[in-house]
Length: 382
Image 1 (cartoon, one colour):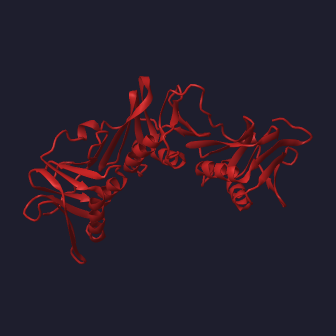
Image 2 (tube, rainbow, N blue to C red):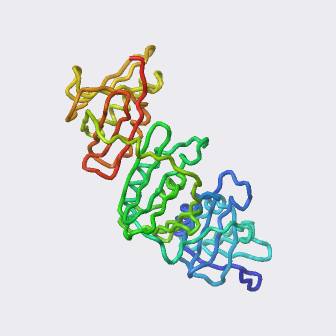
Image 3 (cartoon, rainbow, N blue to C red):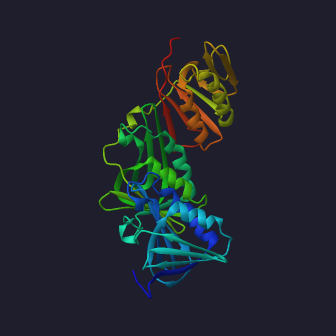
């Protein structure tokens, strides 16, 4: 750190840019910090601007804010306090000045003057920045959609840590994402801008991907992907933002044999109508172990029926239009798993493929070859 007349850092930024940057890195601030410095954001002059960094040791986020640097320097200050202060200021120039003598950040905007006590930057954990040579890149909008179709299926129970992650395979010009808990599997493939060789297979925490989805732009622009040589971290870079995540060690279960290769019954339904029917049935299913029954064809309907029955409450039945191939059949699912996939499926029509009441059910998007979702059935008395 350069100390000049006891002033370590002197930089000017616009309020809206600083507020946006703090909003981005704030996602990585530790809410239950074991170290006081993890509740802080690191401010560092870099590349003729201000670099903001936050980490909870699982993920780290860097965000660059354009500005005018008079003196180089770095300091960490409480993230929540600085974010609340900056968001309360008018959209004008903010001057940030760090006094090395008393470790205080002075924040000046118009007639407003504040000072915040900080912790020295040396105590802040190192968060890697993306290297000059990312291994590949993907289209931001496509990756965001793909993550949306997969991440929710990862387990939230920490008893098997490997299942709280998303298997990520980079091979040739394809990226494959797979998530599973004990009751479902979601798999999505997408194209990479440049081929990866040799193949890289890693497990990324689902929470890290959820944060990446929040900060990614919904636009067709490349997001750069880098995996550290020791395969301990993955880095994503887009639009002046880095997200760095640790990886989960261990062997992800071989999910491929569980995905059915054929079916005896197939129904194609409007996804929104299917979702609405599942939600209505779930209202009654709450009191019956969340079980909803789906019938394809059969005597009751030419289409698909969704029913739920709770002995002391009542029942619900929805008849949905569908185009059907194959034999009439029925199956019972946990309503939540059905609602989850239909809520996140990026297709107007959903195909439900079944092979009987006790075989795993498959949901796909029609004309969407790169996604498959498997739901385990629920055994019922009837």
